[in-house]
Length: 131
Image (cartoon, rainbow, N blue to C red):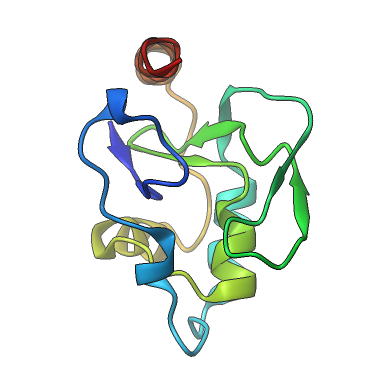
């Protein structure tokens, strides 16, 4: 399981060492294909659902409904608010994750129940260990 938005503000230490602060991944300009990236992130398979909203960790005061929910494409996992950070703050993503999206032409890979169940269990175990 690879975490696309493994920033210290978003994931508990039970998942390992983070990539650092989300603030360190803000870029001056958006990706040229931000629309496709956003659509891919929004079409992920829901692994862990959280009702409510999450506040922008970068201080705009905006909130994202379901931002603490967790999604996956069968290989990578990310929070429900990652699309917001990519679109609003131009947050940079891991190159390997971007390559996967682009190779798939921003279409979510076919669902693999076994892989997704294993990922969901890992996410659950990591989240409950972090609380």
